[in-house]
Amino acid sequence: MPEPARRPTTPAPATSDVRFEELPLHPDLRAGAREMGYHQATPIQSQAIPEAVQGRDLVATAQTGTGKTAAFLLPILERTLDLPPGRIYALVLTPTRELAVQAEEFLAKLGRYTRRRGVAVYGGVGLEPQIRAVQGQAEIVVATPGRLLDLMARGHLDWKDLRILVLDEADRMLDMGFLPDVRRILHALPRERQTMLFSATMPPAVVELAREYLRSPRMVHVDPATVAAVGVSHLAMPVPGHLKAELLRELLLDETMTSVLVFTRTKHRANRLAQQLSHWSISAGVIHGNRSQSQRLRALEGFRGGSHRVLVATDIAARGIDVEGVSHVVNFDVPHEPEVYVHRVGRTARAQRRGDAFSLVSPDEEADFARIERLLGFGIPRAKVPGFRYDASAPPRPPPSEDRRGFRGGRDRRPGGRPGGGRPGGGGRFRGRPHRRP
Image (cartoon, rainbow, N blue to C red; front, side):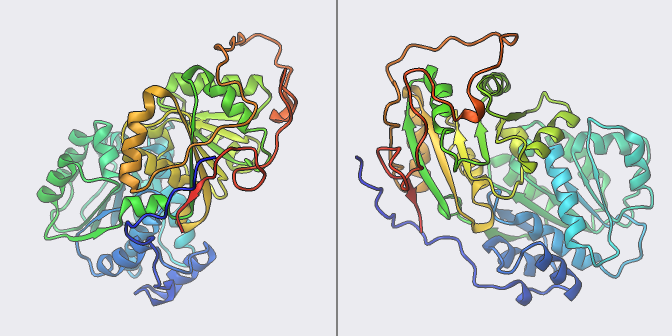
C-alpha cells in the first residue's frame, strides 16, 4: 500500500475571507448573488470585482471553477445599472457555445432584480431569434466570435454605446484559431472602453493581445496549482491503454460515483467510449465539437438532470460545462498540457467544494503525468483495483447492432468478477489512498 502523499509546502489554499456583503456592489446585485449561493467571495472575485467596478482595465489569470464568471458579470451589471435600457453597453466574447449559454444564465440570475437583459449569440442555431434579441432587447451581449461577426456583417449591431468588453478564456480562444476574428471585432468597437481579459494561462499571444488593446491594466493572479488542489482528492491508476474502458467500468461499480465527468483526448475516443458504456447499460452522454448544438445541450441537460450518470467530453467542448454536484472527474486520457488537468479537475470542486479526480495512466502517459505533478507541487498516489486483471488481453468490442443486454447500471457481476464495493479511503476497494490537499 503506498503511503499518502506528503503535505506540500507550496502556497496555502486559495481561500478568501471577504464576504459578498463587503464587495462594492448594489444591494440588488448582492441579493441576486445570495440567491445563487454566493456568500464568501472566491479569491478571483475578491481581487477583481473592486478593481473592475472602478472601470479599470484588468488582466486576470484564473482557472475554471474559481468563480470568474461572476467576477466579470457583477461589475458589468454594477457599471450599467442606471443606464437607459435598449442599448448595448457590454460585450463578452467566449470561445464556445456552452460558455456563452452559461454566462447568459448566470447573468439572468445575478441580475434578476435589475432591468439589465442579456442575450447569448452563437452558431449552430437560427439567426432570427438572435437578431431580434440584439436589436433593442438586450444591454449585454455574450457571443462566440464567428456568429458575432455574422451579425456585424449584416449590420445588426450598434456599438456606439459600448462601454465594457470582456475576453473570457482568452488562451482557449486563441488556441481555437479565433485571433483574426477577435482582432476584427476589437477594431470595430469604440476605443474608449473598459477591457477585461480572463485567461487560465498567459501564453505569448495572450500577453501580446493584452499589451495591444488594454490600457495600464491591473493584474490579478490566482495560483493554478493551489486552485487545482483545493477540495480535490487526486488518485492515479496505472493501467495498460487497451484496458482503460474495462477499468472505468470496474470503477463505476461504486455507487458513490453518481455524477461522473470523463475526459478523452479526441472526439473519436469520446464517441467510442460512450458507445461502450451504453452497451454495458451505463447511461452516458457525449459532448464534443462535432456534435450539433441541440445534441450538446441534450447531453448536458441529461447529465444535469441525472438521466446520464456519465458525461464523456473532450476538453474544448467541456469549457462550458458547469454542473452542480459532479462527484468525480475521470481523466480517461492524460492531457499533454498540465494546465488542462487543472481545468478538468476543477469541474468536481466548483468554487471550493469537494470532489474526486481519478486518472487512468497508461505507460506511455507517465511523462505527461509527471509534468502534472510538478505543476501541482506534490506527488499523486497510485492505486490498483483488487481483482482487476491488468494482464488481460484487449477485450473484443461489440458492433453497434449487437444486443445491448448485459450489465444493469454497471452493478451486475462481470464474468469471473464480483460486485462493487466502497470508494477510495472509505471501503477498501483500492490499494492506496487518494490525496486531498487541505
